[in-house]
Image (cartoon, rainbow, N blue to C red):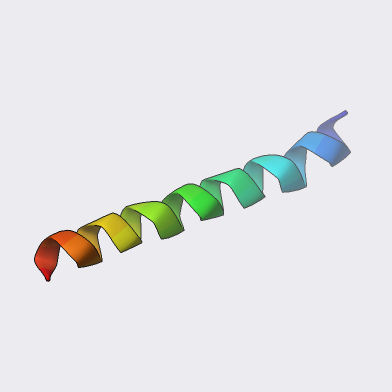
Length: 29
């Protein structure tokens, strides 16, 4: 389970970070 959840959680967190960065960039512009 952990082997499958590990990468998935990392991917989701990375995706969230990208979305947050995009929102911040759009807000700054």
